[in-house]
Length: 431
Image (tube, rainbow, N blue to C red; front, top):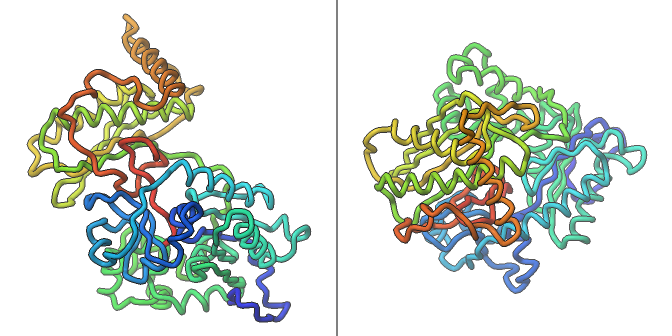
């Protein structure tokens, strides 16, 4: 394994057979904000809403030294690091910076698979003759990001996506780590089991009961025992423990779902208030569906109660839709089906799933054309709001003065719906 330390390494061990790069920007949202506020460099900075009910979207490494992490409740972050400067998020700036980052990657090869606004897999096997070894290419990316964007990136290089991502995590911040193919298993077996992709706290607890604490332990455990402990994931975890990951870098990733969530400033018990918020989220999501040229066959809702317990419910529709009116009808029926709620609601979300290309679907309209009328009206809303700004024109029901307050960005899970009022912005993926 060869970190980016400037040391010389034998030519035979430079990982020339490892052509998958995982490039991850360091504290991306914070880094973007510091471009406009250089005076904040070197001190703890948190990006997120100042509300104690919101979550941390990104934290500088100075703040991380105090235990602050992305997706952590802001109230917890304030307790851990009371001296931190909190900066409100600016999603437009993050999207612009992301576009520039991805443009650098795309100049190297067409085999770029974005994972989020600030990270991507890159397969450089077709670029080595032109640009040098995978390590040379990784260093070139880091230099260009620093020179052209004024930010830093960490790069992991391996023979598979899974191991490349582990390498970039281990290289942070502002580093590069190459894991040659023939050293992959030995490297993996030196790591704790938490390094395995998809092994979270609950899975760690299940493995711990079997006496498993390292990846080497997983590798030496019979697949049957892992399957009994983890279900269908057992075999997958075992394969990863041996570095087996056959997934190719896929340039075009189809969006599997589109949605939005809302965390309320005060917990909400009123059915009317929850239905009004579902209507707002339905309009946001439907507009995004139409913009992307897709429709959904499934509508789901997400409810998080005041004690942080969360449930989801979904409904499959007869025909694919991109109409807020039809999505809201499905979501409202799911809310009604929940019956009496045990406590007030902290967060509500709506998501469009099972997406398909609008051009491939046929609309089954009612005899009197009501569904078509609703869709035509919503398309008119799209055009007006696109020209004059989001939410300049909206259903009268959403103009109520009694609408509950909102806490601002709530954290991950918005499928890219960010920057607009009522949306959860994506959090910084750098963890």
